[in-house]
Image 1 (cartoon, rainbow, N blue to C red):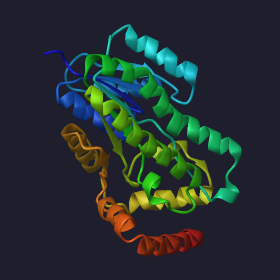
Image 2 (image 1 turned 180 degrees about the horizontal axis):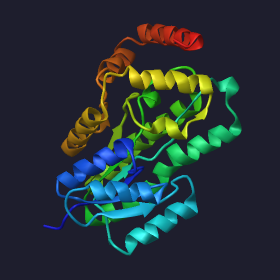
Image 3 (image 1 turned 90 degrees about the vertical axis):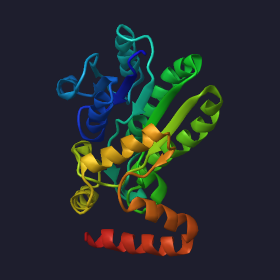
Length: 265
């Protein structure tokens, strides 16, 4: 059997790197793409097995993404798994956000996923199988205050994944969307937006009770099972049920969260 081929964006650190390790351990060849080529190379050096690639890409720009696709095509004629993982974090209420921030978050967090799906879904359809994995965030489901541009960009990833799942199912192509809450990663290094909210996000990471390895293990296992909605951080499955089953109670908790954030707790 041909070795499974996996492309992961944002593979130079955090969840992208952790998933690369797990796919390589499963026997796959992994193409690691990151904004910084050195980070991609560092991840590749950590991987078990052979056939891995280090690529550079700015997922927020059409020409840079197309250049990465051309480079990949010199090595592989197709991929089996696409992990649209690259993204940046931001936070702040609507009245404090700029249009520049909105455009940046949409280009990097949402339209990067569109770019990947448009490029690689046709090949998966042609081969009659494949798996697209989109990294969103629980912020895309939570509707929480003071994390406006980030939450909306990630909600778009969730909606895109839901629609794409229905479109690609008849062709044997699966779709999963990952929706973790905060856990310790290097995500805040690319933070844009409110400094006060960045401090709050840092506290959320430190208090999460989840580790990168635990989140990656849960996410990888769920994707391999073919799950669609993946909530790999410990508290989020119950929070998601609370929102769906008791929306009034959930909204009251959001109001308390907003008060806590305004105090900087």
